Length: 159
Image 1 (cartoon, rainbow, N blue to C red):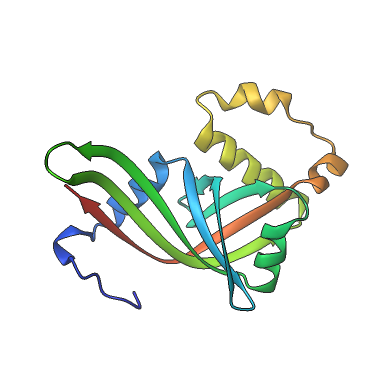
Image 2 (cartoon, rainbow, N blue to C red):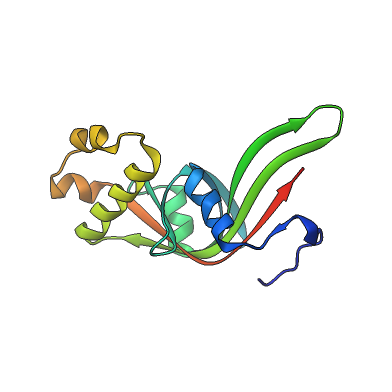
């Protein structure tokens, strides 16, 4: 990591524990920057541990796309909120900070794989949703799929 953690006793060093947080969580907040202008967005994701990446879907154009096209380097945070501890001024949580690059997928096979990963990650029964999705290539082209390739990650936990 480029930076050290000030409260090292809270640092999560176990790679399996970090991956477990990514596997259990559903939302990530992504920090983007273009021309020294910050932008932050929260998205649901699909985690692919084998390729060490997260997948997202969004509209084919818009502010997010403008930012990530200008600068694919991102920082993202996934948080497991386990609740505030009353009368102790503490909060139980686990978090992962990710640094990586976003690629906008264009190949149909890559997009189908990413959608499958998202459904497997987000849905209790992914087959129900898979049956509802259109399978036509032109409809698939209209959906933008991002792949966040994880270059480094760190974790922290509280209370």
